[in-house]
Each structure stands twice: as C-alpha cells, then as structure tokens.
Image (cartoon, rainbow, N blue to C red; front, side, top):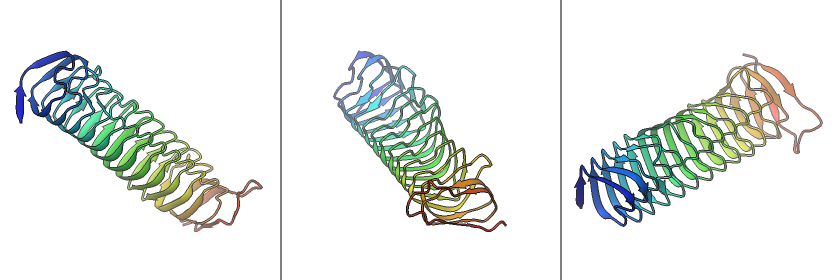
Amino acid sequence: MTTIRNQEFGGERPLYASHDLRIEGVTIHLGESSIKESSNIVAENCRFEGKYVFWENDGFHINNCYFAESARSSLWYSRNCHMTNCKVDAPKLFRRMDGIYVENTDFPNGEQYLWDCKNIELKNVKIENCDYAFMHSENIKITHYHQEGNYAFQYAKNVEIHNAIINSKDSFWESENVTIYDSEVNGEYLAWYGKNIRLVRCHLTGEQLLCYVDGLTLEDCTFGSDANLILEYSTVNGNIKGNVHSIKNPTSGTIVVEGKIGELIWDENQKAPADAKVIEKGL
C-alpha cells in the first residue's frame, strides 16, 4: 500500500483512480472528484474541502477526518464505506451506496442524507437538519442515534433501531418491516401507510400517529398527551402503557390500553373488517 503524508491537493481529480492508497494528514482543497474511481483507500486525519471526493469507490476507511461544508455530495455511488470519529459539515452525503458503517460521528448539516442506500449500520451517530434522510434505503441497523429533521425513513425497508431519539414529522411514511426498540419518536403522522411496523418500549408524541398501517405491533409503548386520533384505519395488536388522548377507527386487531382512553371514536367511516377490539383497563 502506498502512503502519502502531510500533502495538499486541489483542482480536478488529483488522486483519481488510486488503488491501495493510504493518506495521512492530507488536505484536499476546492475542486472535484479528488479520489474518484478508486479502491482500498485509507484516510486518517485528513481534511476534505472539495466536492465529490469518494465517488465510484470500493473499499475505503475514513477515520478522524473533517469534511467541510464545501465538500458536499462527497460519498456517492460507492461500496464498503467505513467511517469513524469524523466531523462532517457537508450536506447530501451517502447516495446510492451499498455497505455503509458509521460510528462516533456527528452530522450537523445532514440535508438529504442516505438516499437509495442499502446495508447501512450506524452506531453513536447524531444527524441534524436532516430533512428526507434515508429516503428509499433498506437493510438499516441503528443503535444510539439522535436525529433532528423531518420526513426521515420515507419508503425505507428492513429497519432496526435501538436507543434512539428521533424528532421528525412524517417519519417512516410508507416504510416496511421496521422495528424500533427503547426509543423516543416525536412528530406528527408517524408511519402512515407503513407495513409491518413493530414498536417495543417506545415513547411516541405527535398528532395522528400510526394511521393506515398494515400490520402494527405495539409492545409496552407510551404516548404523549398530544397523541390524538391515533391508529386510524390501522390493523393493530399489542398493549399501550399509561393513558391515551384518543383512538379513532382502528380496522382490526386487539389493543389493550393499561391506562385510560380520553376518547374512543367509532364512526360510520370505519374500514372493513371493522372488528378491532380496544380494551381499556383504566389502571
């Protein structure tokens, strides 16, 4: 493996089509496609200022590096990315990629992250300003995660999340095969039109949550006082701990509320089979 240390590059494609390359303490100044069409790349303690840095790459480890805001769209169309301990101010990262592992990294400018990606694992990651993150992505595993930004996980498939705080309006819209454990999810219209959604020991806030869901499972979840008109037109099984503001027209299944229900609404707009059972224990 060739090693380059403490050098500076700029302009168009300075390290284009590099293979088996290690860069340490390197700065990539403004320009485009600096390490495009490359493989087996290791970057340590580097600074990236130009855009489109890692395009069409296969196999690259990025550790303790900095991506400036000008390094937008720097990880696209690539495979087998391993990123740890980085600071990233660049928007629009991770697009149409396969094999992404990110750990101990914060993304304060996460606009349109992780679109059309698959086989993603995140650990101890925070993403802010991340409207539309994870759009059309699949095979996602996340632990110890904090997100600020709306419309996350739309049309996502095969998602497993542990110990997260997700503040996102319209999150998990039309998503499929999602399981969330021990997390807090805040925002209106959670998981509308989703399929096979399972929530375990989660706290949920926002209006009109979990409507039009086909195959919803709730296990020991709690709802905030603002969670009104929940479960409309959804097939639901499971139990809810504590009180619920209001439930409206679930389609089928059995829902056990261990606390009290402020309002249970059954009206002429129920959808077939319209045989849902709601049991209020009032504990």
